Amino acid sequence: MDNVTVEASALNRKYGVNTVVRDVSFTLHKGEVLGFLGPNGAGKSTTMKMLTGNLAPTSGSIKICGIDIIDRPKEAKALIGYLPEMPPLYKELTVDEMLTLSARLHGVTRINIKKAVQVAKERCGLTEMSGRLIENLSKGYQQRVGIAQAIIHNPMVVILDEPTVGLDPIQIREIRALIKELGGEHSVILSTHILPEVEMVCDRVQIIHKGQLVFNGSIEVLKQQRHGNRLLVGLRNAPSVEELLKIEGVEEVEKRADGRWVVRHAEGVAPAEAIVQAAVANGWGLYQITPDQTTLEEVFVQLTNQEVLS
Amino acid sequence: MILTIAAKELKSMFSSPMGWVILALLQFIFGTFFLIGVDQYFQTMSGAMRPEQRVGVTEFVGNNVFTMASFIMLFAVPLLSMRLISEERKNQTLPFLFSAPLSLTEIVLGKFIGLVGFLTVMIAIIGVMMSCLNLWADIDFGYLIANLIGLWLLVASFCSLGIFMSSLTQQPIIAAIITFVALFALLILDYFFASDPNSIFNYLSLLRHFEPFSRGLLDTRDLAYFVLFILTFIVFTVRRLDADRLRG
Image 1: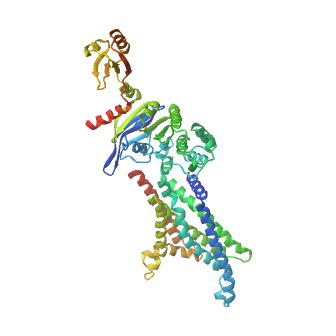
Image 2: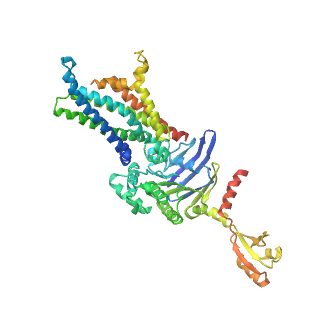
């Protein structure tokens, strides 16, 4: 496909004898937002450093829009915008100076610089901070300047390493909206360990654990795993298991320690209505019926543990 | 691109008091020595009766100022060069340069030119100050220019060593101290080996190669020495930064 923006194949990275990233391969298409998930020290940042040419992979290759980053680093880097974990900002410059510098270094032509700076500031909500020294900005605003310098040259691929760390909830929402917006025209890779964030902004998720990819797929797959086909039912005068199983669509019933029932049902059938009717007709004393959701955390733990066991 | 980085370095230099203070302080010292030189010239020359004792005003004052300048730069350059790379390392701003479409050589050259540009201003001011003598006397511009070129090359060599030391550490102060010690050792190297004039170490001494310039002599051997010195440490710095990328 010609709209592949990032192609990483068989990436390996060793620090001395420690293998930090092991055999990671993936592709990213135009307009996708890819979430990189993983516990601390899983190799997220290392992978991102390799993708942006800050670190050479021990083996494997990375292509940005078909350009190999090791063979032709300048051309490839011109297509990337990168925000590292620590926003790389010269504290002695003002917001405008910093963004102009970034635009120049990324090869924005002289006549377009002013406009590029203006657009980047608007997108990141920095218009009122133009003349302020970066040193005097709050962490949240510094983070925004970091994002602004990454998107100023309108790159094909935007790589953000934990972009919402240290922001307040309102800012987090704004940044998430910005990332979603960026996903429209650019490809975005972001790393995080905040699970709901991935669910909100990403189209695809990769879970990395101990340097290996343990999950790579659409966010929908993860959501399905999350929602499961289970209902949590609270009954005061519970009937026998057999009676519950008689209800159409119910496949398995299990009593939980707190007296509530977990009802597993077939894919695509929703027995909730039937259960309510049966409960009313037979006087089971129904007081609660909710879909039983495994949290994303549980899915995450499951996925990372699978790898450990195998 | 190189000039963009150089401009950024100059801006950073002037946005902190450091740049201004050093510029002012050095100018004060050079001005003072210039003044003392001119003052002493009349005293000394009025006592020198025979023609062979007489020295031109350019040489007399120039020698005073340029010897002082080369010595003062030994202290000033490490203070200015120390933060070039080490501070970026400390503030973790290097990824900004590394992920921009720039080669490492461009980054290092940009920083080098920024710093040398700053010091060139200072050397230019010395030149202007010396040229002022032309209002009253007929000065020897050849001697002056040779000295300025010599001082410029010496300072540029200091800078390239300073950048390299700065790329080795995260602490600007450590970079400054190591640069100072290394430069000092290189300067006085020929004192230690004075007994053996053919020793190879003599040839490495920076001062020995600055000396012909201060006599007004442009020698390609000395030019080559300085150029090689500068290139060597710039290449070392590029290699050092490349090692960051390779080894992490």
